Length: 78
Image 1 (cartoon, one colour):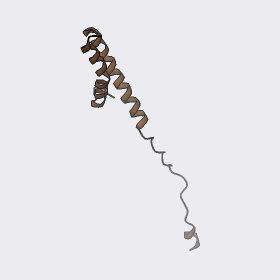
Image 2 (image 1 turned 135 degrees about the vertical axis):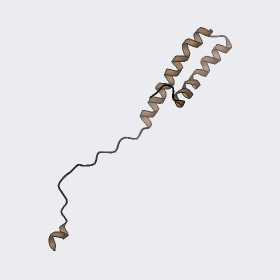
Image 3 (image 1 turned 90 degrees about the horizontal axis):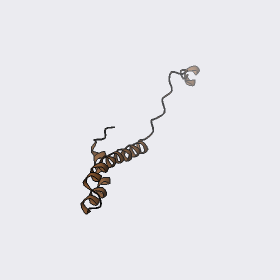
Image 4 (image 1 turned 120 degrees about the horizontal axis):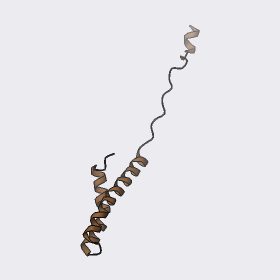
C-alpha cells in the first residue's frame, strides 16, 4: 500500500493539524514542525493499514476439489 494514497494523506493531515496548530501558536519552532510532519504521515499510513486489515472480509473457504462423483439413487432403480 502506497503511503501517498488519498486516504493515507487525509488521515495524515488530520493527525498533523495539532502539530501545525502548535507551530502557529509558537510552541513549536519551524524545525520541530517539519521534523514531526513525516511522523504524522507514518501514523496515518499505520492507521489506514490497520483499518483495512480489520475491515477486509475473510477469504471464502476453498471449494472441495475432485471427490467421488455423486451417484443418483433414482438412477439405480430404473
